[in-house]
Length: 281
Image (cartoon, rainbow, N blue to C red):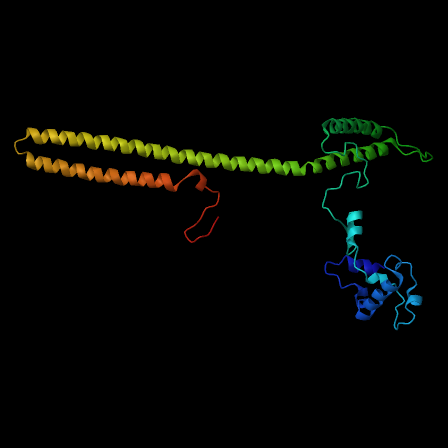
């Protein structure tokens, strides 16, 4: 028996010993038994008498060859595999289901704070009584009563189990809160980056506007000088050439500003960073 249990708990267990019973002959005998006595009476039927006209009828029950009843598993809520019991629906069992003494409400919709506060106060009072009990003289050898400190330690153990179980029940809420905080932090960072980009674009627009005004003033000054000078041809050509260069610079800056506006948008920001070779971080 110990060898079978050790084999069941082995990380890489061998096939069950009864796998050799699943032969074609035995499966045909099981189907024939069901036809003769009915599926409801198979468990209580005497297979040796019912199948007396058949050869090689095994002495072990043929009902062992039937498939596991999934409806029974769903009804019981658990099943056994390799010696371990697993729940059909993965849930966190409560302290009462684990066999402990639960002091707070089982319904998660009920406010547990008053009960847990009472548990904490009881633990502090019990700890004080435990210190008082430790200061008492030890009991005599003929005394059959358990010392008081033993009772206080048991009660502190129960209270500690309730606090730990209540804290474990709050793990999903804590994880949800942490995820919400992380998402809000990412949103704040993206908004800050977007605001910084808009500020840079506004600064470029202001500089571009200032350059345009300066180019316009230089153009007007050049026209006035060309009218007042006798040899105004060379001066006008020089002024017009300088104004053309400034206009080209202004157009380039404006093109770069428009490209930046349309290529970098808030919805395009992402926490992933893409390298030149396509890798993502």
